[in-house]
Length: 182
Image (cartoon, one colour):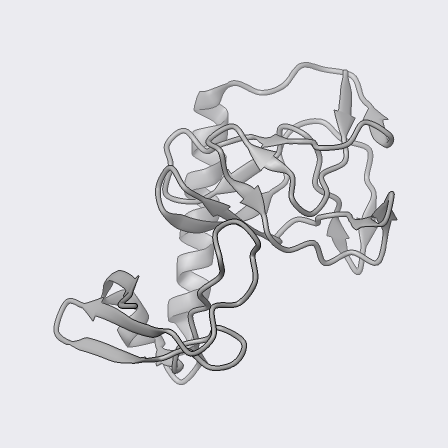
């Protein structure tokens, strides 16, 4: 079985896109994505993270495995979407068959729990949300936004890089919805 490397801009089976690729390696000038890199999923309207899944030859950059075709997008979708390569120049030839959706769902659930625990673990840690243009992935700067939490609403204007004001782990755990107002 051939598993092609995933690069920036690659798709998912749910119509999502890889929006970050943190390796120093590129294929035809396009950066290769690694486990933990970010995807946008239009099906569930959330950001996801790449989770390695299935047979592979160990290949890492900065301690993280390269993303391959049929790895998972861990977002809110069940079963998790699979990554689809947008290049056919570099691949790994591995034995075995791709795992089924049940195994993929279990792997994604475990990954979601790990990410949530990490995000909620340090209440002092603050994280800003980032708004990007759906087509170009350019930051949406100077845009009014609303973050709806279970007990309050936070409104503001994105900075020059498309980021909201930082929110705490306690606020993140109560985040229900976010939207641009302009």
